[in-house]
Amino acid sequence: MPGVSHKLPVWLPVVILLVAMVSIQGGASLAKSLFPLVGAPGVTALRLALGTLILAVIFKPWRLRFTRVQRLPLLFYGLSLGGMNYMFYLSIQTIPLGVAVALEFTGPLAVALFSSRRPVDFIWVILTVLGLWYLLPLGDNVSHVDLTGAALALGAGACWAIYILTGQRAGAEHGPATVAFGSLIAAVIFVPIGALQAGELLWHWSILPLGVAIAILSTALPYSLEMVALTRLPTRTFGTLMSMEPAMAALSGMIFLGETLSLQQVLALMAIIIASMGSTLTLSRESKIKEVDIG
Image (cartoon, rainbow, N blue to C red; front, side, top):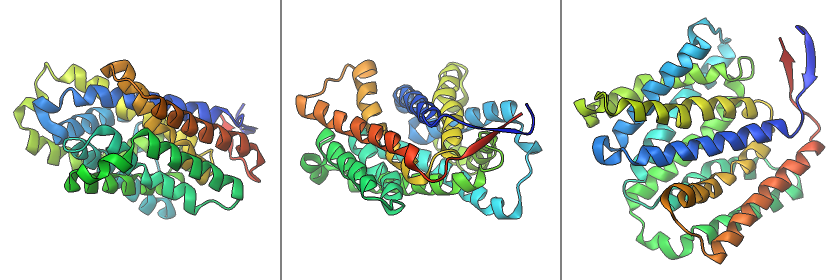
């Protein structure tokens, strides 16, 4: 009913975020199959162009009105969204996917760490760091990582942190529809760059169906769902829950690429999941739970 305010169940934004992570990992596996044909910049351009088109049809971003206070966060939200995708795809051309995910994750992990106020929050962050260290493991591989690729992954992580911080402010009023506008900003900058690097093959009819699937799985669906969760979860909780992203990547590798995990990696994966569960369980103790207006 219009004008009636209801509290969302505490667990619902968490479930929404998990679905978004599953979607984006499936899209990443599909995207990598196109690298030999159009390269990482081309896949980024295809993903942003088609994803923005889908989001625009659904949300009609030209109808949205943003206050002066929201405009600057919206601009940075869109730029960080595009930069995050562009740099991450470039990074996994030269460094292993697991290492890239771990390096990129330093962004949301830093958000979770620096916005924490209670001792229990640091427990989840520390458990997540330990899980990431033994899952990848960085200790054995980091000396052999391409420095350019590592720098790009860290840059993607910085963009991810900006995406989290500015997304909350930009999307406070319009929620998931904000993603359409942010994606439009990203597409204006990064689609021409990727298209120039990929060449005419990028828009060949045989590639477009895969491009549509990547756009839905990697952009339209997960970013819309993330915005729902982002505007209804505390910043530190969102950042800690995103720690499941490397775990999702590992599972995606097992399902789509036939990869296997060692006992050490399985234990590390469980540590990350426990940290995310712990963060979720302590969410009910927050002094403020965001509300949503139905109607």
